[in-house]
Length: 260
Image 1 (cartoon, rainbow, N blue to C red):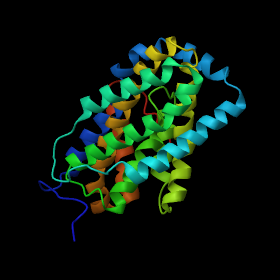
Image 2: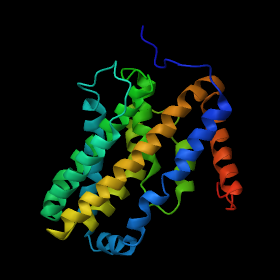
Image 3: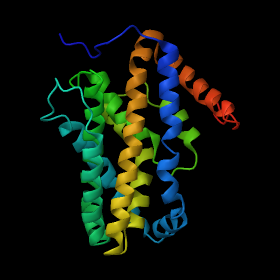
Image 4: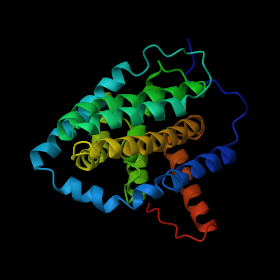
């Protein structure tokens, strides 16, 4: 039987934690600086959406994640060990531009496509690390990547705490439902930002580019930690990761914000 993990070298927990923590902290760094200036406009657009449209966006998020769970790995060559992150970012930006071009109607249609593209890129990263995409633990990890909210979230500690404590021991349907609580607001924000036709095309391209890069980084965090979870146990590995994130924050002169 194919193993879910093919280690290339002896496990070095300290190196794994250091690399994963650096990736996690970088995810909301320079990449999102440009969008930070537009954050207030994005939020205003979101607030203009009627509640029924926001509910519809959440439903599209669920549908997209369920579809992505079923089809994201189809056609991926299991022998490939190279990421294709740039290609997925470009494709995601194109999808966002096409979705935003027509405002709300086309953006609603595009939301499941964006989710599937992100999941496809996440699976691509898992494969590049020698993980078996047919293994349930790996496919569950692909879903868990979406639990980290999005790059415009202000409280990344809430995302980390949610990922650590709320996702263990659930069936796939329950796991998707739990993750949607974090991921749906990301798509509602996207929908509000792209509400204006034509202008929404540029916004959609930019948002999708940033979203894709953000979830790619989160995927590297999740998959880098998988072998550590198998060695130490899920809870111990994730708590060690949170402690390393705080240690890096302190080293940069920042407050250790994680709340256990």
